[in-house]
Amino acid sequence: MKQARKATATKGKTNKAIDSKTLQQIKKIIEATDGQAGAPIRVLQQVQELIGYLPHEVLEAISREMRIPLSELYGITSFYSFFSMVPKGKYVIQVCLGTSCYVKGGQKILDTINKDFGLESGGTTPDGKFSLQTVRCIGCCGLSPVMAIREDVHRKVKPSQLKDILSSYR
Image (cartoon, rainbow, N blue to C red; front, top):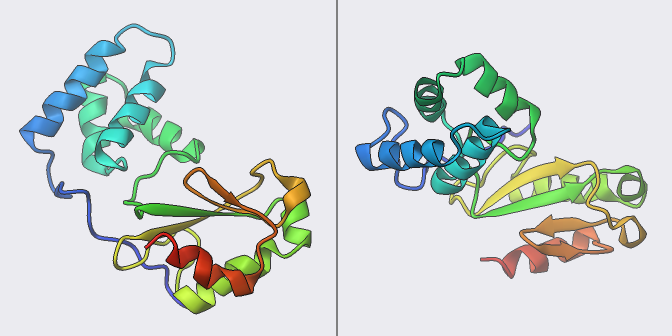
């Protein structure tokens, strides 16, 4: 079985430490949400938008600044699927494996992406262009199988169409 390829790019940030500019931006985000209900989730969302993902060092900084246990932040980031602790590609491919999509070929789409592009769910292409996720429902069951890339929902996708679909994002 092929290994999922993980991107090493971190949108200009190092994995070892947070630069002072980024730390100041994180502090501003925390200050703006101080005392609000759901503040940790809001902070994590905004910081992920800023950096692109939530590496361990960033979670430690947020934990320190908000005086929240690191374990609580890990619990949040691991529970909600929209948070990522690893870098994602420029384009995140979401393949639906909900009941309707699965029955109508969603798994074949996933298998083709894996075979033809060497990309497994949770992985990122070496060039950092694409990441692959499986999702349980995109809400387009009547158009299944579906695949989403950014705001674009590709409907009634056939494995033979994948090369053309993905090349339009390069």
